Length: 193
Picture 1 (cartoon, rainbow, N blue to C red):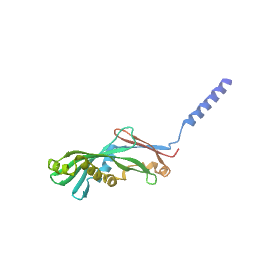
Picture 2: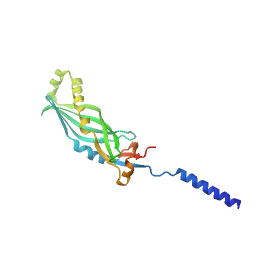
Picture 3: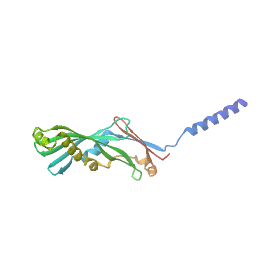
Picture 4: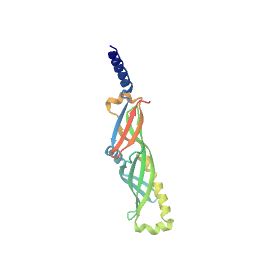
């Protein structure tokens, strides 16, 4: 009888321990693929800007995902043009962070910033003019200034949405974590702890 009582108490104790370890689903992980982000970003390009005698064109955006970072990177090709045969080509690197809007359950790429802008090539026709302007460092400064307009043109890109069956909990939810993987981004959204 005492053995049965011990077994009964042991099973009650183990059940209580197991129940204490169980949590209700208070979060959801949304996986956003590189392709989904790319599809939302691409329609914002090409971006063109004219400034005095220069025309800048930014095109061919590519999503860059660095594992274990919490920002989403992107790159685009650039073309600065004085005349059709007088060009400077290069690349820009940008990154942004994911923001969650609880009311709609949508995820946006926000706070996009210019990380780097570099010149790849200068057409031979421009070399004499560049020397007169002060050389490549001066042109690099102008190039970076022109590149600063891109983040504003692509801010607030919608990249994800909570599943319909989780929208009831969305109004109280926050982003708990963002984990960048090679193939996409895992965003854990849940009730505040």
